[in-house]
Amino acid sequence: MLQRSFISLPFVVTAPTVDTLRDDEAFARTLSTVQERPMSPAEPALDTVVYVANAGDGTIGSYRLDRQHEALVPLATIEAAENVMPLAVSPNRRYLYAAIRSDPLRVLSYRIDASTGELTALGSGALYGSMAYIATDRTGRYLLAASYGGNLVSVSPIDANGVAGDATQTLGTGSRAHAIQATPDNHHVIATNLGDDQLAQFYFADGALAPNEPAVAETAAGSGPRHFVFSPSGRFVYVLGEFDATVTTFALDADSGTLSRVGICQGLPESHGLAPGMPREEIPDGDDTPRIWAADLHITPDGRYLYLSERTSSTLSTLRVSPETGELHFVGNQPTVQQPRGFGIDPAGRYLVAAGELSDHLSLYRIESASGGLTHVSDAATGRKTNWVEIVALERP
Image (cartoon, rainbow, N blue to C red; front, side):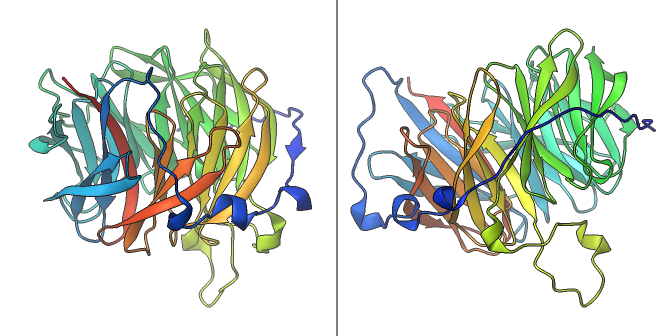
């Protein structure tokens, strides 16, 4: 098990003010006001496919992102297995991976048709825990996974045909591992330990993990680090706190693969009136206190805007990013699908797709480049307990 180490670093809180709180007129225009936005002549010709995991139905749904009409067009729904979640896409966009959180615990591998986005099942590999998060390394040769209930992370090899095999390494972590990714240079790996308010830091070589020195970086007490993203430059890591809806900025030392905390930004207005969150399994019976329950985090490809979802309020928040310093500024918060556990941003950075575990539809938003604001443009029917979104751009021949 990783040993805890404690650090104390200064950080700055950027809290939303009255002037920056929700602006429904700017953030939630109706479909009737939508104006078609032609693609830039410099933008490559792309077909964009959206994949979603429907845990309640045990299926994976696919949609074409129709940019001209700003709509999600259903393509297909395939059977996977009960409690399919999470998903991951290979770096070359040829393969999709889906973790199954029902017995037998495993990862399913699919080939993505480069022209149509159609999925073809290739095989499966055993996982030794119910995985809350999966991701390939930067080469696409290994699958990394984090288990919340198992307090562990694992590595699985991916063969030349894109099939993820049985996990070959499993390491115990701190409490409630929740997300895992390789650093941009692929020499290190970071994983969140939600229950310990820590980020585990690993060396990564030849498909094997080993604790870095130091083995952990600390987040604020009680924040519950959940999902994280790298800045496009690779200089910063942004970490979402499930229990306080903050986003903490860390500077990444590329040589050592270690993190230094440099700032923190509140991502949810106080006007929601939510109490600090806590692990759901620790909430006493009969306690109906509305609590912060942040879920997902994504950054635009240009690194200018960061978005987070919060499930109790069923909202999305927008943060503006200062790419040179990593500093974050709260922009706004708006309603979205019910209990938004997952969402995704298209590779062009123009659209956001949100999925709600208690909604029967996906919501598509246009990202306004000047402000980062989200304009709701359309919905599309989906399955039960939709929880994960992956968006893949396919090059047209």
